[in-house]
Amino acid sequence: MRKICKTIPMKYDEGYAERNGVKIFYRDYGPKDADPILLVHGLGAQLVHWPEHLINFLLENNLRPITFDNRDAGLSSRFKKKPSIVLGYLRYFFRLPIKSEYTLNDMAKDAIDVLDHLDISKAHILGTSMGGMISQIICAKYPNRVKTFTLIASTASIPGPFNGATKEVREMMVSRSQSTNPTIDDVYQRELKWVGLIGMQGKNIDTPKFREDTINNFNRIKDIKDGYGYARQLTAILSSKNRIKKVKSIKAKTLLIHGKYDPVLNVKNSYFMNKLIVNSELMVIPNMRHLIEEEILDQFKEKLKLHLSI
Image 1 (tube, rainbow, N blue to C red):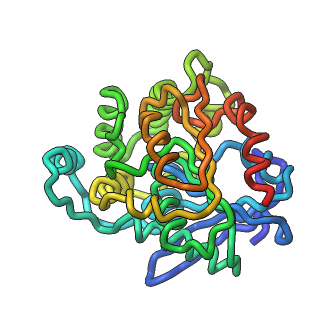
Image 2: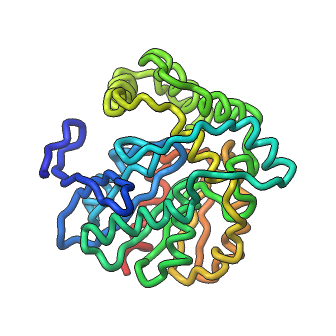
Image 3: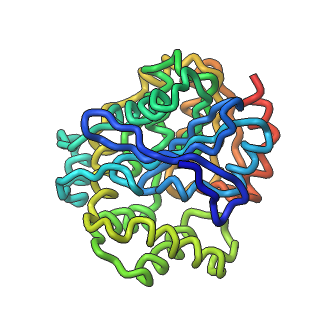
């Protein structure tokens, strides 16, 4: 179904890719004859959380952005268990086994299912944060489906978001994993605090546009009663096996982008991945933390354009 986006001046197709009863909601910005790039987002994020300036940049450079809601986010399938992140974190800390309803491998297959549904044999892969972890598996396990790999603010080593996260970030993640049925004001105040914590320092985010976007994103899923999707995704991260061997096997041309003062995943993770991936280049951005604000994209867009031009 072709729709006109209210916030970005472009058209897109959207729908579901389904396998074994799991439905993954996607958005295809087209055009069909452009070079496809699959964007894999992070923990708790919906496809609408991809910044407009990034989508526009890709379209302007003859690429075909395809975004999707990971399972347990947005309009994609929700699962059933109600995991305890406090217990999960304790088991993770003491290196005890953690049971999860699904794994990052399952989430990587979801992404491949979207490409299959759209009859795309090969695409550029861009992943950020948890989406970068999923993308590592895509590139390692399905190398014939990958043109290039762009990995932003992610990690390959300890399988969890606590690898270098600050105390404030850890506390907010645990708090969010236990939040159910929040009001729109609860969500707005939480988003202000979260983006203020992981976004550019000193940037004013309490704007009418930020409020409008937050309300629209909330309304997109307001009828979904289950509030444990974030916790289940986090459990999937904590329970995943070490990906170092997988990352070392990646042969795709890889561009690593990381903020020098990322409070979620320390920049040391990308230095490590740069050593693991033979065909990789690392760009560390001094004033970037964990998000891709327009001012941040401006600093690496030419490098990204060149990287995607093969």
